[in-house]
Image 1 (cartoon, helix red, strand yellow):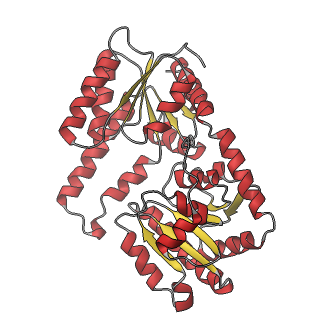
Image 2 (tube, rainbow, N blue to C red):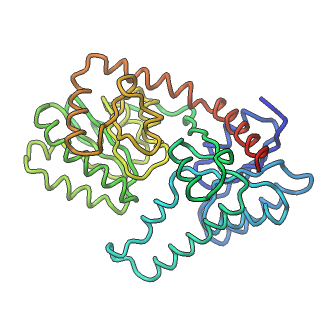
Image 3 (cartoon, rainbow, N blue to C red):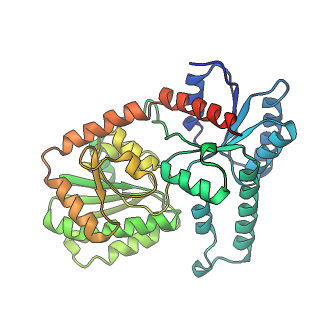
Length: 366
């Protein structure tokens, strides 16, 4: 623990990702945890609490992951107070914004205006920052390219584990979702994003041959969002009813611990991510993961050690590598390797030390 750097952390989403790590790492941390609900109340609270957190003598640096109008207000307070401001990227926000407005989906003028306004506000936030913390090496390359900053202004700090997470009950998952098959392959995702839906669609197609060859195996997709019905249509398009009946699309699940306890392996293909928390949670549950080689996942999965990495994100590649994983005698060992690795690399105390070191380094190069 260090008391050299006084940090004010402002967050409105998954506060445990920065609050607990920083609290463990430094004695000088001020937390501004903003309730994301209620537009007016939320923004007034953001201004009031950020002003209070930056009162003289103020912190050495403010770390924020807030975007849009809320994030703009936080950045504006920092600029007015003359306090250095570091922004934390949890994913590729530019790609995420592209998901917001899609005319081919029938999005109208109101959505278009919201898209351009959010884009402008986010760009103003990035311009106000003296540096950036990102969750993966790939995301660092994106941020350097999009912001035009120097590489030393961007520091990589991975996502911490969720502390004291429930181990879950496989029996409870079987009873709740009616899953009887012995072997269960699992995907947990956020179907709000087209890039994640497209990944699930690829896995569904790859699973056709896997499930046809393994009659006592099932594939489960958990996640809600605007593309949930598209996933269900992709499953309905599976020709073999014996395979189709063993693909369970369960929608949003408020507590996925039971599903992780039930699963034998995790399969995750995505075209929009930073450092997927779903993969991290699966590894915390000792599941080997099959992932595509993108978006920080190659920093989470070492091929052959704690999972398998797809050569390309295609149905054939999914089928080939999932089949390989199911045939491996060391599958359990790979899952244990995954759990031990995240317990070390994603330990909140270690992440806190890395956050402090990252901001210290950024301050030296601002």
